[in-house]
Length: 356
Ligand SMILES: Nc1ncnc2c1ncn2[C@@H]1O[C@H](COP(=O)(O)OP(=O)(O)O)[C@@H](O)[C@H]1O
Ligand SMILES: [Mg+2]
Image (tube, rainbow, N blue to C red; front, side, top):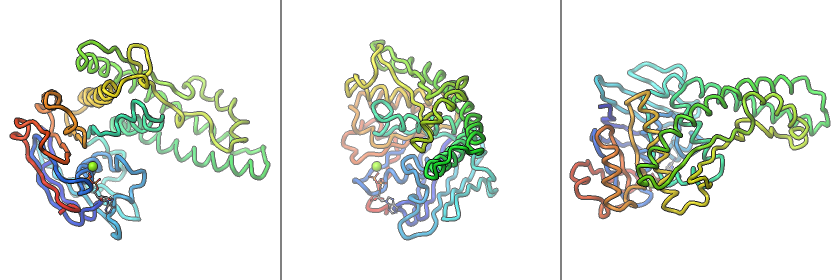
């Protein structure tokens, strides 16, 4: 089984210097609010994805008033692998087994973290941007080409929006550059839409199964992709929106406006009860594990602040679903609500104030 044996943190979030060994099975990280539980598991996430699961800016990972941070992890399966993530104002770097990784996109996918957290509910009832983030992070983890297209797309989009602004402010509508940027954007955009289409079709299959079994066949669900414009018609859609783009100084169609909708019993999930919404969010992450499993067995599961909230029966069920195969990290403020049997088989890691 693949697992993370230990981490060493330096100037990472609230940790100045910290070392911790982990169990290959269940690790329960316990401590009051704001002591650094999420930060510790965020370091595991960073080793997988090379960025934070919550901040948009990498620099937030560096401890206040420090100018660099690093996370070093030792992974075990049939052999030992050492990974060091480091970050400073000069940028970030991954060193794997003492060798510097040239392109981060080549590294991402070494192992996978599937994170269950309270924010998952946003996938069900939140804004489209949370669902796009879910797509981007997970498809990037699974496919380097997607990540490359996404990075290119974002850069071209930024250039195009700057140009639109510039043209509008100078009342010029005769740019030669605009059609060139549009074509480049459409090229990358088509690839992104095609990856997303495939991913959603695949995760949909697992999601339906998971919800069926969790709800005892009561809920029939499906996920439907809603691209802002389809692959085939993307050029045309951009042409049609060009006037509006110039007027509004921004790009009004393309994958950066995509969304997906989850239906249950043919209704949209905004009509679901709290309990149903939680079930769907949970099932979506479980479906993600199913999907990743087809590609790799190097998966680490993180349950951040979602476990103590479940009743004992559900805790047992969830652990049963995961335990045999994966290393698990659970964060919680109190062990009082945890099942004794689960506790007995876990390593409990107590965190005091500010990562002490
Ligand atoms: N870059 C940073 N430098 C120092 N402290 C930080 C940084 N980012 C966050 N923190 C602080 O770290 C503490 C721990 O946060 P967190 O790990 O989310 O706690 P928990 O999950 O235990 O509630 C918080 O007080 C937060 O303000
Ligand atoms: Mg937390």
